[in-house]
Image 1: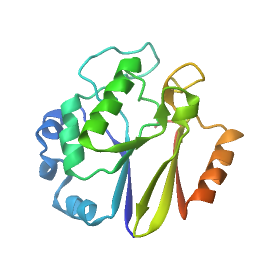
Image 2 (image 1 turned 30 degrees about the horizontal axis):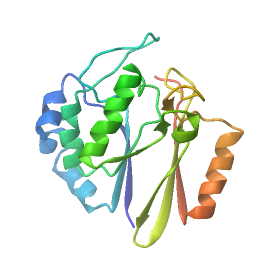
Image 3 (image 1 turned 90 degrees about the horizontal axis):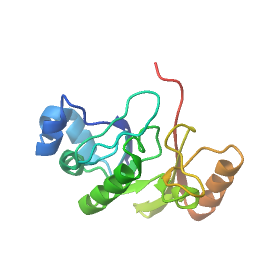
Image 4 (image 1 turned 180 degrees about the horizontal axis):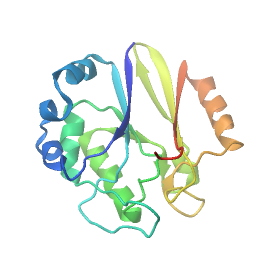
Length: 186
């Protein structure tokens, strides 16, 4: 079984048109596209909300967004699953998260690590490849994007609860992949 786990995928001002038009050869190159195509499953971190409405939250640091049309290239390269548990997924507020989830659903791309509250955000994603059940648990450091009991957002890493979630997932799956997003930039 071949599972590709890629890092942050972020359409930026310099390449958004290529993403929107699905120009994957220019974006990724022939060799990387061949590797992606040959994989049984492809997982990336989507490090930006996909929305056509700019409504940045008040936070320290950059607020990111990419147009919903950029999903064209993501679908074309065969992304199967996006982790959305990261420090930028709430950069455009609740509407940005909602737009991202709806855009990915319409494109047939699954996601993990976010939800309308902490309970739904902590739910894993489970898939089967070559008869093996694989669970993905995704969480992020506590920044501006974290879900709570009353607010949507990313699944926060909790060093008391997260290990329990992973143990429970392992009881249901042959393999578990834990995606943790955090650390100091630069």
